[in-house]
Structures are given as structure tokens and as C-alpha cells.
Length: 269
Image 1 (cartoon, rainbow, N blue to C red):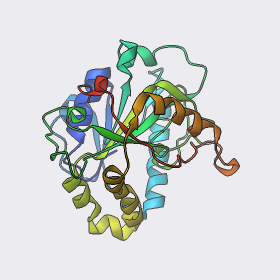
Image 2: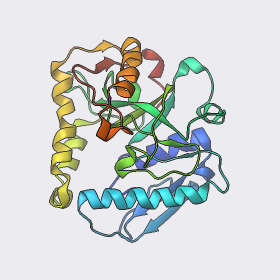
Image 3: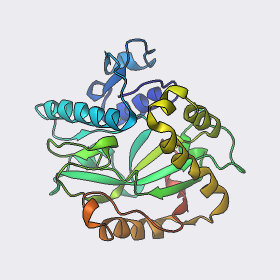
Image 4: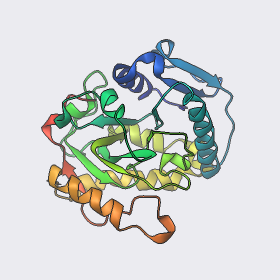
């Protein structure tokens, strides 16, 4: 579901359309006043009436809506993915196969989580993003994030929690070959402009935006780790060190979690 976006939607459509076929994409445009993405004619795109809610309630409503719709999709599909418009699921190129083929395997779990990588523009070293070139060819660093280690792959009907961060009443399985790239901060000026939206801030998004923008300070101050070594460590820490009251969400990663992205990802998104 998307609203007030002129930056990511066409990129999202082009990427996932290539991975799974455009006819298998479903996008809800939130608001009858919204301009449709230019590629919306290639997919199943539905415009719905917008309702104003505070941030927390709006997130819950959206998750409930998408969960109910996903349940209907399981009448015709074996696997359903749900994610935000700035999130891109990637199979590790070491697997030398397609994302579609990988997800078509038999899995014992009810969902799959991908290791979350929050990608941002380095304030000192990187230029504004060129939307016509692969994002990862222009960005060298990512923060390994528990918040973006999301169960975006459903292997049977499930109920997502707010923001797709967890499955209601179910544990999670972090797949060793899947990565979820979050590009909300891939361009500094665009991210700051989005965070200054008065309507969103009035409905409770200000703290969320402030927390997200901390990534730019992390990029400037923390030394990047060797990615593949830390990826293995992060998956263990995210799974093993959870609090009892957050048993179905990844544990917060403490300390430095900034990595330099491996070259093999450069042309993927």
C-alpha cells in the first residue's frame, strides 16, 4: 500500500515485476487524490479511499487490511510477500538462482524473515541518488537492522503485526540467503523532505522519523564491519537474545552494526 510517494513505487513495480511477473503484483494506492505510478497499468493496482488515523492505529489497520487480502491470494498462490514500498527482497547471488525459484522450495516454517539492511547515503562520500541506475551501485554501506529483519514471506495465511515487523502468534525464521534492503534513507535530501511532512508529523510520525534519521550519524561515525562475517553473527544474535515479552520479534542489535556491502550485490536493485 502506498501514499504520497513519487520516489519508490515505479522502482518497486519494475523490480518485483521482473522477479515474479507484473501480473502477480498487487498495489493499493491510499487516496483517491493520489497520482498513480507510471507503471501501475502493468500490475493489479487499486485506488482506495484514504482514512486519517494516528500513526499507530493506521499501521494496525494497514496490516489487518493486507493480511486479509493476502489470505484471499492463497486461494491461487503458494507464497505471498508483503512489504513497504521502499523495501526490496533479495536472494544472495551466491545461490546462483532466481528469487522465485528459491521461494518455490519446500520450507518447514510458516514464514521467512530476511536479514534487514538499512541503506543510506553516506553524508560525506556519496552523491544524491540517480533513480535510473541501480541503487546498490551508488551506495556502499548499510546498517544491519532488527527493525527491518521482517517476516515478509508468508508460506501460509498469517496475520502480520504493524509494519510487517512480526507475525501474530507465530515465531520467525531468519533465512540464511535472503536480505531485505530498506531504501527509505537512500537519498538524504528526499528523506529529510519526507520527514518534514506536517501532516504525517501531526499524526504521530515525528519520533519515528527522528529515529530513522539517526542512520546518517551512524554512517559518519562508525567504522564499517566486514559484511559476510557479521551477517552470520547478526542472524544468531537476532534469534537468540530476545526478551520474553517480544518473543516473536528479533532482538535489538547492540553496538556497531554498520557494514560495507559486498560487491556481489551492486547490480541487483
